[in-house]
Length: 427
Length: 175
Image (tube, rainbow over all chains, first blue to last red; front, top):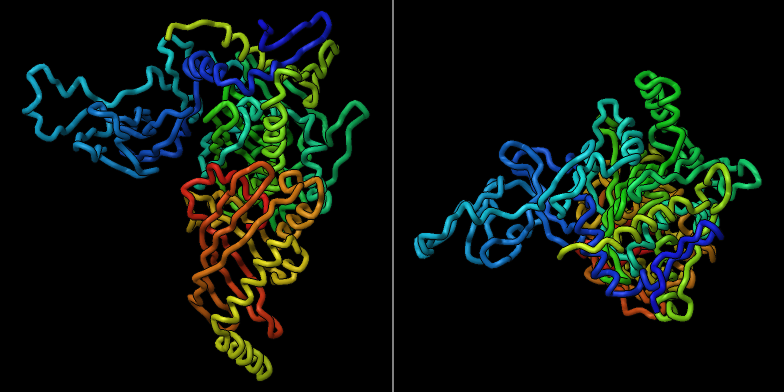
């Protein structure tokens, strides 16, 4: 009964994932220590906070935090728990405040997290010092090109090093903005999926499922006049694309675009009226970056997983999607749309419309992904002992290019997961 | 010119003459069609420029031109959505959810020459296999237009009260 969690045998080109990893509460408890407490975890984007005192409260892998700007306008992350008795200090979803006051006994904290006011302070003994009771912060908070991450491991490698090859793919997203400034657009999609969180990692960049899971979305595009043709007989998908590991468990797909892009590839779904605007955006891109780089940015779709739980999907539109386990068989998903800061109102409207055609809980595609994940969870929940293995060997042992419908990139995630799960840590 | 003002007057008359009872009858009929998955007949209730929108839970009052919604369909995507929902490959709704809609507190909140603004509360119970009830609670904001003497839906916003979609999960059916 000492089966491995991941079975990887390059000799026989065999790769299987033990379904226990998707159902067992004990595995989740270990994941919390060995994955979520030592990896860089996405908190939010700098554009969500503009001015000193701006804040947003959110849950980062289950921990309530205040994501905010301090008195010097620096981005800070505070654990949203009063140092006195533990109540959540800030219970509003967003706003601007000079002072956060815990309503329970009235302790208050300034924008820099310092304990500011304690009602009846003179009843505390002389050893009590307010300076010892500021709001706690994660040991590490770092950002890359506006994306803010935290880490609960003080000894973690710097974020820049951790991101490894993923940086190149983040840069491709950022290059869509003339000033290199992307911003999160207001409106949050917060929804639960009744499945293990790792199934959404797989699904987020598994292009093998596209034809069967999303046939109605493909039909919608075809009916609207979008042209699609498989490049050759080895391809399952309407365009050429690869799967590519990027180090440290990060990986991406890198596909020739067929589905349209707000920056900047027009498709009939956008409507004739949108054509000049998309052409103008394209011209700006070429003028700024040159033909080759502009084509790289505008004619490829990339679904980038940053280990363990962040998806940057640069497809029909750009979405930031992060997710965390609520239970072995349940996760919370938080998703936002991202766009260039300089975008005109009409281009912004095209971007948001393109987003909704595919993505989100009311989109024409994401709901079928959710159904697939929930079907997996229902299928394995009570059968994982009798049917313990999920096969993940597509493309194994093949020389040359690994397609997006192969599974090299999925295996890269699982191998990093397995490596960390085997690394014991002091609790 | 004269004919146009006559039409306008008659449209105005049509809109002013409408009482809440007629609106309720219309909304109950729509709810029955949706619960029965009679989606083509539901499409017939819409104008040729109809919109169907579900705002994000954290921005219930926003505009889909500058805010991410859950659903913001123009008539083309509404039709595409219905085509998809009738296809057995719309996996999220195959087998179909069973829904039961309760519509209440119907109010006419504004009217001009040919359009009425209507609000109503809703509870939509949704059932899937092996699952407890999902309860979608909120209010509708309708723009109803009188066309050839018939009420039509020019816009319907379904605004959810839940702070986040959370355990409601998806809005994969017509809310």
